[in-house]
Structures are given as structure tokens and as C-alpha cells.
Amino acid sequence: MSITVILVIITALVSYLAFNNQSLFYRLAHWPTKEYYHKEYYRLITSGFVHGGWLHLLINMFVFWNFGEIVEQHFMLYFGPVRGPVLYVLLYLMVIVCASLPSYFDRKNDESYMAVGASGGVSGIVFIYILLYPWQMLYLYGIIPIPGIIAGVLYLWYSSYASKNVQDRIDHQAHFYGALFGLAFVLLLKPSLFSGFLRNLVNEFPF
Image 1: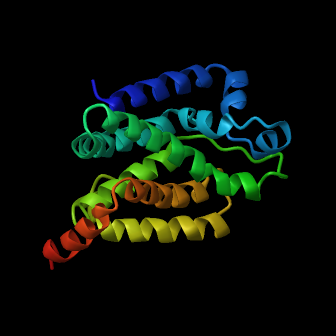
Image 2: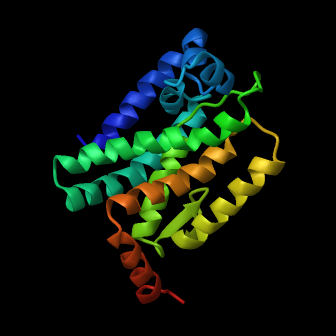
């Protein structure tokens, strides 16, 4: 069983338990005022294993499973069968934490603000995939094919725009910074991936 599948199962179990236990949900959620004033920093990680509903959970875990399996295989190839999985898990958890930091600082005095979900970590994994396969088609809504590099740019643009202009319960900042931190961490681990990305961008240009 892959590390990705194990993380999906753990996330699904924790989310399911929180669906049926409101106290647990609130105890694990990303809640900047609790983190800042009560030092409950564990929430920066646990919030990535809790979701707002079945649809939220299923979408995140489906995307994570699809892209995470491939990224995990590359980690094993690059760093070996022992270090690879360890670094993969550490990267995923670090991206979840770092993706929540902007809203932690921006919303630390907003007691009504709370966020849950693995979207930040999943965004990081998807963007590592795009780094590896920039012209591979991604399917918007499972139907509309868009080259990964173009989908990535549009995703960053929308996440940045929505974080400033859209009033909803989605942590768009986590999507944006999760993607960037995912790229930053993997390039720190293996800088040569950037030159490989540039080669693929030119050599596999489809138009």
C-alpha cells in the first residue's frame, strides 16, 4: 500500500469522525485566534485532516490520490525506498502548515474565521506534478482538457484574486501558497528538477 493511500485513509477516517463529532471538528480546525492567543499550533497540521463535508473530502482525496501516487513514485526514484517516502510525508505535512500561515497572520484577530481541508497540501502535490509534466493535460471539472502549465498559472491567478475579492468559507490563500510552497520545498530537495522542467517546457511544447 502506498504512502498516498495511507494518508488518504487517515484523512478520510479523521474527517468522518469529525463529521459526527462537532467538538472534535472545532478542536482540529485551523482557527487563527486559537493558534495565536492560545498557542494551539497543532491545528496548523490537524486542519489538513478535517473537511467540511463529504463532497469537500472526496474531491480533495480524489485529486490527492491521482497526483500523489505519481509524485510519491518520483520521490522513491530520486531519494530511495526509505528516504523517499519519509521526505514525501514531511513535504506534504510542511505544505499543509505553510499554506495556512498567511491566514494565520491575517486572521489572528478574527474570531469568526476558521478553515479546514487538505487543499493546501494537495495544491502543493499537484504543482509538483506540473513541475514534472508541464504539458500533461489536466481536466477541469473532469471534462475540459487544459495543459498543466496553463492550468497552474490560471489556478494561481484565480486563487490570488479570490483571496482578495471573494467572500466565502474557502481559504484561497492556502491554495495559492500551498502550490508555491510545494514547488519551493521540492526544488530545495532536488534543484535539478527546475532545469528538467525548462527542458520539458521547450522539448514537449505541443503547439
